[in-house]
Length: 223
Image: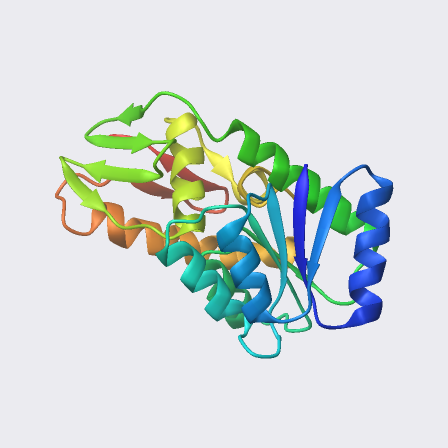
């Protein structure tokens, strides 16, 4: 598995590189956003570890340009910012996960393995529920033949709902399966993303599909 690490703090970069190479990953490095973007465009990677605060081009700009060019490698953001607003901004623009500094290597490794595993499985036949259609290959979604524009995390959330229809999904279940870990305060972000998704999937349709089970979680079902 080949990983690109874009990190300008030399000690942090070397710490990550040594650890991942010790786990048999092939690691390439960039120390600024421009070089990282160029490498991501010209090479194939199974995962990108990307610092947000970078010289020459910041991490969010790198993510946006990659996603605008339909380069969909999984991206794990590394940053000292840990507010809900900062996390949502990174996820909204197209990152797949978010790890705040300082972090233990064991936590980083768990996130890396989860994202690589998910990326390897991200293929298959189209999924249908009611008048929803989801294509795991292209990451496109339609409702009643109208294409719905989703961010990467909204897509991941909808895919989890569509693979588990008519089943109540708790916030912990969603955190574990969509974000690959349990984090109590992360439930606020889950609620934010369910609301984002509901506005895109249900707002213009009389039949609502995403329902809140008060005090428990959410369910995708036809009323």
